[in-house]
Length: 328
Ligand SMILES: Cc1cc2nc3c(=O)[nH]c(=O)nc-3n(C[C@H](O)[C@H](O)[C@H](O)COP(=O)(O)OP(=O)(O)OC[C@H]3O[C@@H](n4cnc5c(N)ncnc54)[C@H](O)[C@@H]3O)c2cc1C
Image (cartoon, rainbow, N blue to C red; front, side):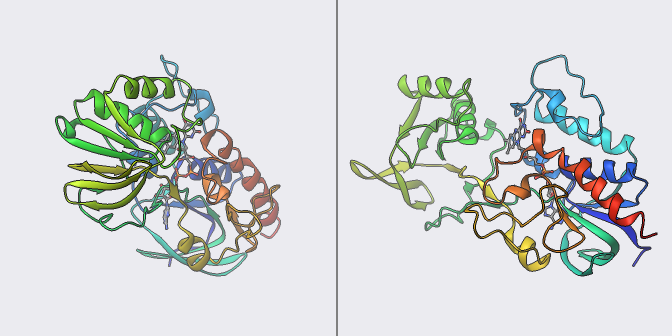
């Protein structure tokens, strides 16, 4: 085990990086431990995905995010966060998964896939993008079923079924149809969600109206077979041909990591089951462990996003400086 750090941040997403920058600026030593690549969630987003936020609202550490266009794409944001991490000379421990946490405030041991790291405090910024909401139907594990959409080009002239009615499914269905796939959208509710961005929803509704995208509403999936999705529609069962299936039904935080591995109590009075934390300092019910970013919302994964979650960094850094510096 190496020398004890003041803090370990778990997760090198935008908010985890923002936390590490602000903690470092307090004169504290900090490492960021990340199970995948730098800004791993964004690496997994669809190619050329356009953010809905304008660039200044995605900035961290006061680093400007200059853009000639109005909205950044995934690649712009990846470039930005990776350059900011380099400019700040952050201590990054990539491709190292956190698996456990023992000890107490001032004296923690972070257990990882590559050994242990001693730290006085821990910041949990693990986001929500690693655990898809499962459909729970037979055939979900088949190789042509995916919970993550990347790009449409492999699917030209193929039958593709997209499950879900929110932004991700709307954008995927449109891109797939434009790339020449035969797309069927399957929606559990009566319509495309009102929460779909105002510039995407009419586009999708018009493509459905003109027949370029087929859509089933009030429809549930009964099973997936190697060549079809079996659904229950208000008119009875149907078999929709499918060479590929995108089940874009959202994601949830990794609760086994939060509760079992990190020992963080949840707020069971909140239906979203977030981690219990103090909104002033973001310290959780486990003293010396802080929560930042999307993970703070529990199942409500849109409660905190980059725009508002990045501000957790200053609160946590100030709390850590208050707790750790006088103890030296
Ligand atoms: C398609 C899409 C578009 C979006 N557009 C916008 C937008 O325009 N504006 C906006 O503000 N937000 C947007 N969001 C939301 C935003 O991307 C997330 O809220 C944001 O990534 C949250 O940052 P975070 O740092 O809290 O978590 P994440 O970015 O999810 O980072 C968490 C990190 O923790 C790592 N991790 C998890 N478990 C472990 C472990 N055990 N050990 C080590 N590391 C671990 C993960 O690999 C990941 O890198 C969008 C989301 C999606 C899916």
